[in-house]
Length: 367
Picture 1 (cartoon, rainbow, N blue to C red):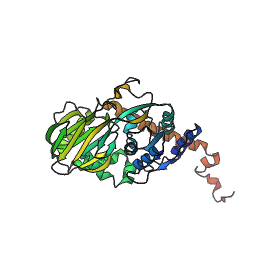
Picture 2: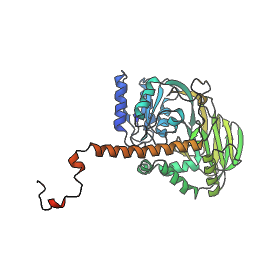
Picture 3: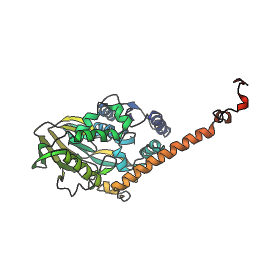
Picture 4: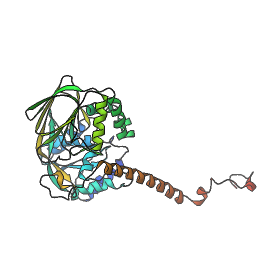
């Protein structure tokens, strides 16, 4: 189990220890390791693979999952996931439980998937010697990732709000760059704000970027966001939120196996939300290069082979409604917790704050 202790909004150490103990109770031999720096997860995963581990469990966010996957590609070692990050896009897409006030048992539920789930071979992306599970990004969103990376405590405190605020700030200064993009041999020259190469359907917890994406089809979904200024950036954000990227003439879409990105001016790059150097870059798919453990209820539309329950249509309004419902449940749970604490206090403690009887003025505290 490779645990990123700075992932997510809260310290999950106790829950992670409980998860490891549960697996040991099943007879599993479990070693829990903490990541200590960027890229450490990939090194730990390679060491576990070389030591003959049957499974390596990424306990963290999407960046941690991508790093662990990078260390397991083209091996028989399975990748399991216990999500404790901020966005948890991989987990949400597959239906792995994510911790929240209304789902406090999510860590243990995700642990049970490791023993009861299905194993699938999935594609991964490759960028100049490193692999990604979800996406590679160039331009605007990569710049946001580079700006946030030095401020881990702020990111942990604010969560997705940190990305939103940073994105709004960057949208005021970011400009489109003339970029040459080669997509499976076809050459395009555009002024781009952003380029996303996706191996997943979701982009962030709420936005379905690539509704046609499958995890084992040997293809990557490529989106070119054209534009020059702040207005174009806002337009793309609104388009993504509305799910209209498929009909926007300012957004070009392709499916491909190999993509080369060469802008006139060097642009930042990210892999699975973690900063990864600058352009130019070569991106390609590595078909079915990784074994992953997924829930039995993962939508069959995510795989060419099917074999799971039918995919549920998920609209932006539905996902926002689910997020709001979770927040409401969190408030309700917190109110009930405080009420239980008050009801559980001894009677003399509960009444200690009542106004004193005027007849008792002048009496000592010990009386």
